[in-house]
Image (cartoon, rainbow, N blue to C red; front, side):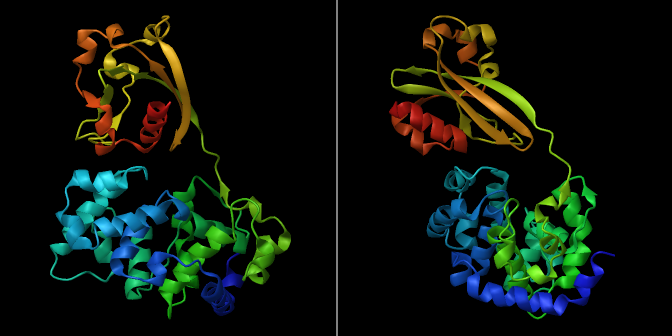
Length: 348
């Protein structure tokens, strides 16, 4: 099997990886002043989000919520507001639930299995938290690790997606794990993937394990992993910008919604019961066109300025619509893109 030579050389791999990490690791707050709390918060923030984006959020977060007890005592509205702009808000709500669950326990659990039972904690996060904080012998496997392992072994297996690749490669990750320093080993793997073994244009010439990497030696690292191409679905949304007497019309998502619960966005046509003909008249002005991606969707959002007189009483009485004083916009929690767009449009 392709992985057998690597397993036979695992001691050399572990030493080279850790030696590199000791010298070249980035000085990140959860490393320079480590704590269980910072590890947990950073791991949830780093799901779907890059380190450079997370750093200012983490700094503000630990000022407002310095520990699990303070976080548990906060309202959900406070928690989500302080997460505003990071996206994937289920992470914030799960972190809030996790803090409440932890302070209700007689002692903080130290096993991966126990952490897997807690809100918002999956295989990767449980391995990261317990290996870093408690020395648990559990290997992390995420997109970075998948990339490293498939390149090391030139594994040409066609995987459906990163999740299926992670599951398939978990035994190899476990076999390579340094049992003496599992936390640093896991962080070194993540660091290698983030700073050297890039998806595109990997820095093979400075890789500490190049001599052990089949794809690196063959000169084709970007051929791995073999993941099926994502099918991207195009979507278009028309939204309304309506200001009347110093108030902006917004839509508040229901509290039991799966996404964006209790959060505000500019109202879409459907929220007002409008069809596309409403945006064809001379008093409907296209003032912005924005593009964004959410999971497998590429979304184009067209924002039209409409006078309140164009909106019927029935439209304005629909569930979720609220008029908010422009001066009070910053007190609300908006989805990240809409926070930027509203701020931009108010300035212009």
